[in-house]
Every structure is written in structure tokens, then in C-alpha cells.
Image (cartoon, rainbow, N blue to C red; front, side, top):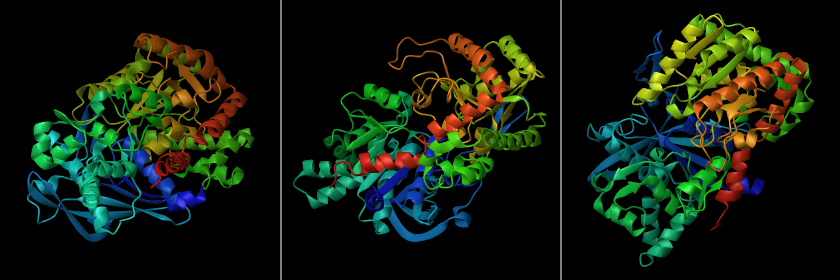
Amino acid sequence: MERRLRDARVAYLSMEIALETDIPTYAGGLGVLAGDLLRSAADLGVAMVGVTLAHRHGYFRQRLDAGGRQSMQPIVWSPEGRLGHIDARCTVNIEGRPVAIRAWRYDVRGINDHVVPVLLLDTDLPENDPDARTFTDELYGGDDRYRLCQELVLGVGGVRMLRALGYDDIRRFHLNEGHSALLALELYAEARARTPHDPGAAAERVRRSCVFTTHTPVPAGHDQFPIGLAEKVLGRSEVEALRALDCCGDRLNMTLVALRLSHWVNGVARSHGEVSSSMFPGYHIASISNGVHSPTWTSPPFQRLYDRYIPDWNRSSFTLRYARAIPAEAVMAAHREAKQRLVDAVNERTGAAFRADLFTIGFARRATAYKRPALLFHDVERLRRVAREAGGLQLVFAGKAHPRDESGQALIRDVVEHGARLAPDVRVVWLADYDLRLAQLITAGVDVWLNTPRPPEEASGTSGMKAAHNGVPSLSIRDGWWWEGHLEGVTGWAIGMQRRDGGPAREDVDDAEAMYALLEQRVLPAWRDAGAWSDIMRATIAINASFFNTQRVLHEYVVRAYHNGED
């Protein structure tokens, strides 16, 4: 295994990568997962290089008024002040004109000082026309044309920049979602140069080089472009090459390109692999369940706890399985400290008068309809009764709604309005501008992590995994990773009986009723019993944190994907 880890030569391409809180090159789970995987690669000494875009305008800074109305402000930052400069240049053709690309470098340094470099591609160069200079500015901004231009820069430009920097020995190109799928065009051109009279052999060489991870079970989440637009942006000969590879018809589907030209394809949870296989019949889609970077998502109180009782935990996440041997009071003391940190932050930001002795539920993720953030308020009188029986209830929400997602923005307003009506029995806050720093506070400081997606629309989810690293159990719908992480009453509780095979859909009222019943009959009684709760917290760490981490994820990729179909 150690030889394989050292010998892997992998380029990891992702439209977003979360490097630091204040480097706004990420929007949500896809980017956070990418950053966590690269951090584990650095810890394990894997020979890997990351490729993404500089996103000079980033995602957006979220502001909320008293009624929960979201406003968006650009994040002003400069790669020049934060990243290493690279002299290399490459060029791609976009709409028939050359577009120059440079790269900035960020070093992800592991626990043993091994470095995984991340290249952030940037078209803001004086030799480019004003339009081309903006191609790498906005993360998930603009129209279809803008998105396709970005994906051309990431895919084709990514390969060309790697070659310009001397990365000629890449054995695997890992496509984190379909945004970088056009790299196959460049690899195919390289392979055709080696075997000009055998296009089949060239295509097979591309397949052996590519690994593809798909992250969404929702058809709308797979980028597709009109073929006329593709011909305009990429060029007619490039589209003809994609047609020859059977990668497009009347539309350019980036997921289809990645599926056709990868030797390994996986979803990000076992259930997601099954859903993806049904969406794309005829393709073998395996599963490697997501994880999180253990040192990043373990709060300072729990870091000190593990340092004392599991000294090697930050070098081997698997050793967290020994958490059941940690004294119960030590675990509870660490949680009290983590919770007080969250309560102090909430009160400083909002003046909501949160208290550390009240039962606190966390819900933080992208604000969009299928995640159902307002499900908890389906029956406000029932929720008020739960709160009174508990002696008080605190709810912490956070998450951004996409600027064009009006329904997602309305959900934030809905939660805030319900909170105003439920006070003082239920204290509700929606913390603005959800980022890495805030996520670390919330996932560690609440008592229970709530997740209520509408199945089967949750590919995996990772926020509950972050909570688990701090002993916080989940109260979740059976979807995504919770099919694997759920042990009833041991690592948390499952809401409803949704069938994994996509059987009859449940209504919101059914899931809300099941959630209230669990809170009343199972969750709150356990929370009142310190001995029972400490057992649940230790089991959550030992069972879920020790498995749902990116150290295990990377081991699986190395053995199953990067060394699968060895050259």
C-alpha cells in the first residue's frame, strides 16, 4: 500500500477547491470535498497535483436583513497577494481566438511536510481581450457560453498548463464532476499524435488515463450545452472529434463525455452509485463514499481530547475507532467547550441570547428546495410543544442560496419568519455567509445534526461526517451517506422509512411527523441521560468518524481507481 501511495501520479481537476476560508474558490460541498481530499493526499505523501480556476470574483458574500432577505456582494480578493506566482503560460482557442492562461500556485502541506501543489488557472492577462480576461472570474456565474468557456479553460487549459510545467508523467487524470471533461479532447489529441493511424487505440489510451467522480443524482445538475454553442466555443473540428468518440449528439453533455472516456467511474455514496447507474444505463458506476479531512473538521477541544487518548489520530484517521475507550466525562467536557464556542459566536453575531444548557440542533448547507430546511416548521405548534418539554430549544441554520435560486432564497426567509413567531420557546438563527470557519463552529457545537433531503436527491452529504468527528450524532432522512453511517440509537436516528430502491415517495407531512416523534421519544430522552448521550457520542466518533474521512477515501481511490487498468 505504501509503495502504491508514493507511486501514484495523479492530476485532480475540480471547478472549485476549498483551500482556505478567505480564498473564495469554493461554493459548497464539491469544493470542500476537493480540498479535504488534497489535504489527505498531502498527509499520505501521494504524488498529486490539483487544478482549478482562480475565481478572482469568487462565489459571493451573503448578507441577510432582519426578515431573512438575502443580498449578494462580490468578494474582492487578489491572487497576487495570496498565491505563489508561476511563470509558465499556455494558450487555448476559444471562439476561434487564442486565449492566454497563467497559473498561480497554492501549496497544501501535509503533516509530514509533503506538498501537494494546486494550480489556479487565470485568464486575466493583458494580452487577452477584455471578454477573455473575465473567463476565470466568477464561480458558477454567467450564462451557458461563459460556463462552457470556463470548462474549456479548466479541461484543455489544465492539461496544457500541466505540460508547460513539466508534468509529463501523470498516470491518472481525476475529473471531480464533469466540469473538466474537455481535458479528454487534449489527451485524445496527444494520443493521436502517438498513434495517428489508430484512433481506437488513442481513445483507449485516454480511457486508461481518466477517472471520473460524479456528484449529483439530479439530471439538472449535469452540464449540457447546445451543439451550436459548442461548435462556436470549441470549434467545429473539436466537436467532430467528440462525435467520433460518440460523446455528443444534438447536445454536448459533459457527464457523457466523462463517462465515455474514463476507465473508472464512481458515485460518492453506495446509494448514489446505484442512482447514477439507473440514470446512465450501460455504464458501470461504482461507489466510493465521501469523507472529510479529520484534522480540519475536528474542533480544538476534540483535537486536544484525541491528542491525549488517541495520540496517532491525526496521522491515521482509522484510529478514531478507539474513541469508545475515552472516558465519558472527558468527551462531555470537550463537547461543552465546543458548544460554548458556538454559543458565544451566535450571540456575538446576532444577539440571540443562546444558552449552552439548552438542546441545540444544527442545519447548515446550501439553501435549496430539495434539502427542505423548513421541514422542522411543518407543524409549529408541535415543535413548540417539543421545545417546552425539552425546557427550551435552539436551532442554528446557515447556508447560501444561489443568486438565481429564488425558491432557495424564499426558504431562508421562511425559516427566519418562523423563528420570529416561535420565540421565546424556540430560539432560531440563520447565520449569514456560511464558510469553512463557520462550518467548523456549527458542526462541532450543536447537540444533533439535522439533515432532511428529499430522497433520492442527496448524493452523499458531508456535513454530518464533520459533526461526527466532534461526537455529534445525526437525525437524518435515509439518503446519501446516512444509509451507511446510520445505526439506530447508536450513531443517531433515521427519519422515516424511505426505501433505498426508490419506492413510493413520502410526503413532507410523514417525514415531519416521524421527526417530531423521534425528538420526543428517542432523542431528547437520551440527551437528558448523560451516560446514554456520552455512549452515543463515543460510538459516533468510533464508527462514523473513523470511516467517513478522506484518508480512507484516498486509499480507496489509489487501490480501486488510480491503479485500476494499470498501464
